[in-house]
Amino acid sequence: MSLADRFTTKTCGVLGCGADAEVVIDHPEHGERTVCGSCAADFEVVRDV
Image 1 (spheres, rainbow, N blue to C red):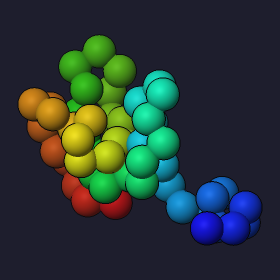
Image 2: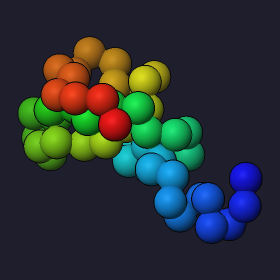
Image 3: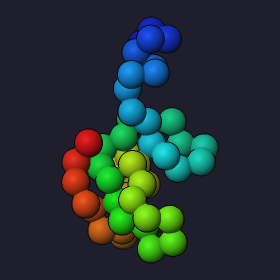
């Protein structure tokens, strides 16, 4: 992966996670967040990325 690809590929919004983003979740305290599949856990998935 080149440096340019790193900035055009969406990554997980969870602190400390650098995986590719897969879904947008509805977080009860922070609203909509773009996260990877493993960080989506038990949150409601709003849409795929």
